[in-house]
Length: 248
Image 1 (cartoon, rainbow, N blue to C red):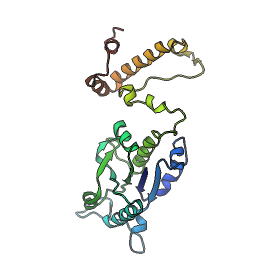
Image 2: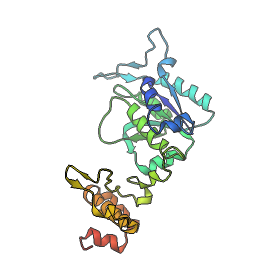
Image 3: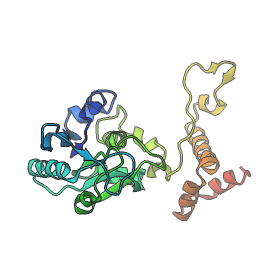
Image 4: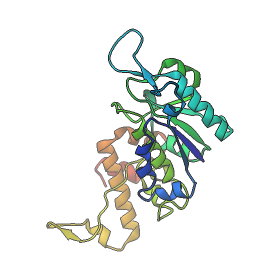
């Protein structure tokens, strides 16, 4: 798959693409990332990509023409009609299901806004999908683009050391969309606190049941909306119900 990132700061992506376990996906071309700076497609001696907003007000607005020229060059290089994604406050929240969709796609063109925003005429003409990371504002779309790329990369075969690792992640359908359970490692006793006894029992069935119980209780406490979705999907059995009611 190929992701083209339109950004005024391509240098932000260079360490990201070369660091951590997900670099395997980028180095192998499983997630082929190309960076395009719209400043390279602006005119004039100063290569301007922004201007003051009509109607007045603070800040600057990214101009439509450099973005349109950059997009045309990307489309010519790709030879397809990949969707244009804008990271925006009005976008749909990024979740695991959406990441899975992108992970199995041919990729996209990720548009990283800056300043007060992008000329709405460009958005109306070219943007296909808008995505939000949450109810807060970043200085630009670069961090959001990295979040999507990282989430997509770790789902690619061979990227994680353990092929089944991501199946145990929070929100994964393999866990019925629940939060993951707590994890412990050596030493067995740290600062006077030991691990839950069941984890040292060697009884795998009991360990898996404990982990399931913890996922249920953590989800009920912190994300009851996820638990409601699991109930509606019929993912909870009678033992799960007893655990949640405190009767198990």
